[in-house]
Length: 167
Image (cartoon, rainbow, N blue to C red; front, top):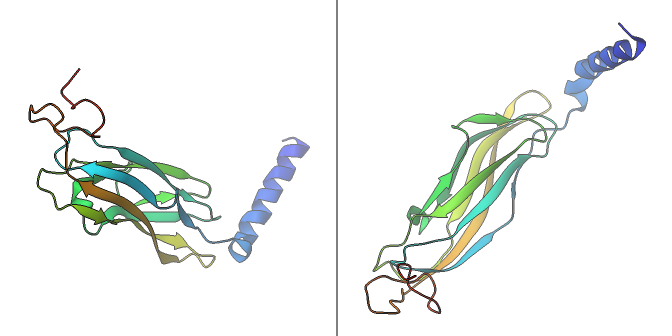
């Protein structure tokens, strides 16, 4: 064993022994903050999706138990996560998720919606216990009437271009 290896091992042992006394808890965060999907047209065939990043900025593990969209209008969206729940995020680890619209049916109630992206989990504290964590971000969107620009029954995503079925 080289002198450098011996020093690294000794340091790791010392840090490991004292880690419990000096360790900062795990801390879950979501980036970015609140998102605005803008105007979504009821009955249109294409819809936006946004990527979020969930991370652990603490120095201990954090557990993610659930990632959901909650509130009025949330049923028109799906949250895609790469992991099955629950799972651990180690210190400095990140996970990307996608919130995508499933489409709004024709006749959807027009107006403004603010469902919340909710991450429920637990953060490991310095005593080795998990404490409850809940983080929320607003996902704003407004449902507006669809536009059939050429009268063929297909609605456009925006009212200043071609319908989704037009080339």
